[in-house]
Image (tube, rainbow, N blue to C red):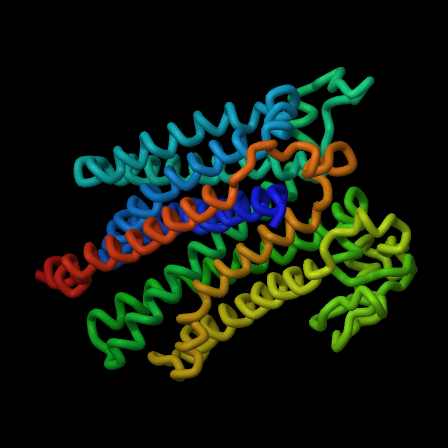
Length: 443
């Protein structure tokens, strides 16, 4: 394995771990805020308990997100010095502003955790709202660097040097709003479905309808409703993302759909895998004209094929599978939310079928898996460029060797951190069972 591949694998693994904590760090504050608002509106103490318990879990996740994020920042400098030189010259603003977003989140998180009982209802909500704003802003700002990599702006290259640099033009690059929006709404979706999964698992264990069951049922429905809303928003935003790819990164869109020949009325390939030799997507279900409509809102939109570009500039063709997995999970989650809402609020059923409960339990892990697929697709689909059509990945990698040892070292660290997260959460919530808190409120 060459050093470039090891460097990409190491940084990709780091981000693959960090993105779990970062995504939940954005999504769970929204759920806490909604629970607080529900409590103030209904005066149902169950929602106050939810907000309190979710905050404790969020604090643990945030405690791990900080070191994994720090490791990612250090690795950017150590593994990709050529890229960080460009960042310093052109796109440093998101990193600089993100510091303030993190301070906002950390400050009001501390206020909410340690002084919630002494705050007025309005100040409680304001504190959680600012935690939510800080967390979402951090995610959007950091992601903006990735957006810049795909749609670079705010500079010219003259004799190999970056000139006429406009940091704000780089900041508000063409995909800033769509990419930032996608990260935000998909994180809100994931946070909601993780909450729903935990509640469904507790209901599965409880089985009989009692005080504890009804508490978890409220949490489940809250997670399904919010998750359903934002999974639909993610799908709509995904349509805009496809149009951006069509305009700015046509090779990536072609690879995502396994399209080799430029054509109008291009079909959308669902499933299957891309065969480089035969230049087709085998065993796929094709929807006629759908890709053209997705790309340009017209069935006769011309979509560029991979054969219009040198093969060495093609993204890896397995991104088609990643793209399909991401879209497939998102679609399933939309329908899962609709079914759950209909059974509970339209048909007024107190209990869900066991098979549906299994799907509810799987929703959280699947949504995290979709985030991972999306992250890998976004970054791998841009290859071989680190900054699209400006700078190749191989041109910015470190010249250091023996990266394999470093890779093994960090793998061990990530395993320890992830196992510790699970153990700490289990320890805390076993020491503080929900039954005890419900009894306190009841008495």
